Image 1 (spheres, rainbow, N blue to C red):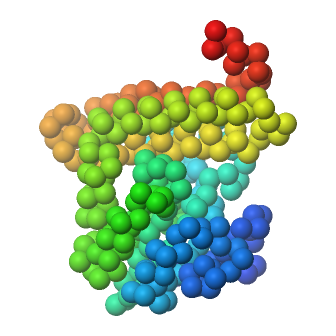
Image 2: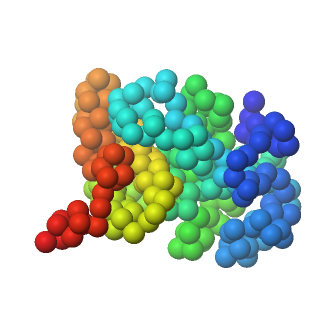
Length: 278
């Protein structure tokens, strides 16, 4: 089934949500509702609706980590597999059908690398959306990206470019190449864990923050590993067509992403942070 049909089927009793923020339906109705938590982007949404009045939106779609996925087994980030269900969600997916073609743009709210990680998790071959990867574009819903979102939507909606071609253009714009992506991913993961360690010691209930941090680190590792493996150019120029060598390098790149274990985050105290600063 294509992505429009899959998402449209997720309503009522067929898709009971634990989170009160869940919404799946008309984008127009969503932005006018009290459930809208993306109000700062209403102007952008209205522009998209002007081009496609029947736009649908799915908010906080849960994504489970596939235990069967080869990439997940190779990454072996065991703490990620301890996360409760619905820890990883796609904040927003807008979707539509036009000229018998289903299309969607999924958004993270953090950064482009995590958006790619979400995309790769959502479209694992053995998962529900496994056959929809050519129908979905991954982007980041932040103010600095709104111009790119408008342009990408226009090209995608009007059929000027396919999802794959548009995604490659965005990759080039935001991560340039996989080596630069690795450096950005390392810095990003470090910033995430540093910030979590500062915040978590001040919290009585640190569950959500810790789970979110582990999930974000997993998405970063996932994005880097799969991006490396998807590069036909690297396979040819760096690994002489040897997929095994490419996989070894992809794993090594992913292993460079710094992590702090789930148990360490739970045990962390203010004294630990003070000692580290000294």
